[in-house]
Image (cartoon, rainbow, N blue to C red; front, side, top):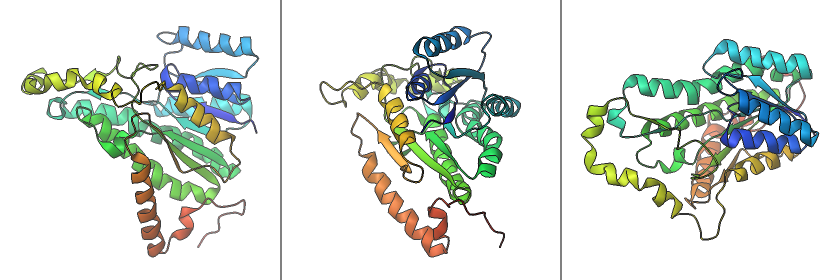
Length: 303
């Protein structure tokens, strides 16, 4: 069934590929991106032209996840034009590469603002509508780094761990209002995105130089990652977009809480299963087992 979808960070990479994949499936897609009239004007035109040429309902909307006002305005635009919002795809994110000590607190604060607080801003804008309708889906583009914790990406890993935790606990609460959650966990990709080319470096150059003995490891990090891919496999991020489209095509109530798209064969699925069982046992022992399931259409009653 077609739905109205808002995607954050849709100018490039996984977000852009997802916008195209979902529009091709018949969804009404709002590709959120910042700087529509400046830096991303060409990318916005390209998406709109693609949608028109393919006969798809593919739209763009100004959305800067660093701004409460921008998130509220983007959701308001979707509701005004489409009349409803069914799914939010949280994709916007940025990458930092470097030695943890060399990142200033301000560096890390900024990354958390983008990768973690950006999710909270958009959720706060969208959830009142989803709760009122007692339906909808929050789909988060997470990361296998939150499980395998690779080196030289410290602040990024921290931000993805924080975002994952926020998504999990939010899921307990919004599930009582009929809102589903899926966390899609991509592994590393060395093609098809601007994640690594546009990555930021640590702000303290002197502290970076202190770790110069590790520079050769950082230099071969991308090649080391590619060596993890099975021979002949096309490790392209379009696989993530395809998985998001598959999940959203499933009937409401049957979507997985987690799904992994990882060509590096890091074993994240096994860790997720152990974690799921432990969490379910713990939450059930607390007496909150109903929070593990999405509620049906009946209203939430006050205690």
